Length: 227
Image 1 (cartoon, rainbow, N blue to C red):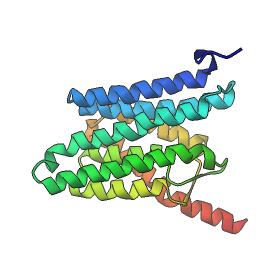
Image 2: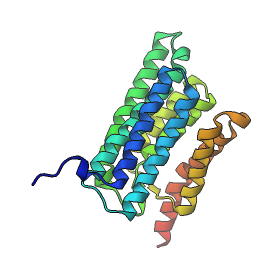
Image 3: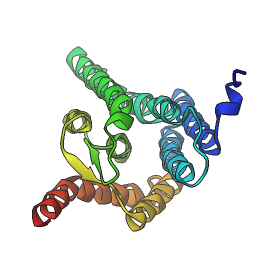
Image 4: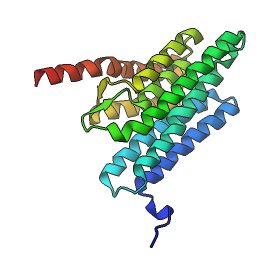
């Protein structure tokens, strides 16, 4: 007897649906001109993305899990961040057709490489490291820089670099419980406080992530070398 689609869902899959909703709400906020709330919803989607993995490891896995997560992440880690950057900078880019084209081409590159990253994640996953920069890290970097107001022509090269980093062969360590906890706290504070206190929370989140991005591959290389 064939199962219904609903019965194939697990508890973790329900959290993944929350991830999708937060990504969708982020895009709605952009259309309403609420950049601040759009930023917060993307961060909440990232929390849901992390939580569904934790729940999946501790409960019965659903039959749709891996496919479900990749599709959900495309909304919150691909489309929503790309739209966030576009809406944030379209005013700066509107002065010149070349700037506008540069913005669109850069975001198309990010979106396409994000699709490749998310589609191949479960095929190439390893228990000890990520192959390529995680899409969640790329998302936090570009939306945080956009949110705190880095100049337009400085942001786009960063977007290109993190886009390529998502599909490269560089290995990044999987954070432990302590690092995940610190990151979650910073994400929550960033979502709640926004630019309050001179944007201290998003800046701290971005700084912490940049340390991981730059030091993580070096740590793995030295660990492997010493084994």
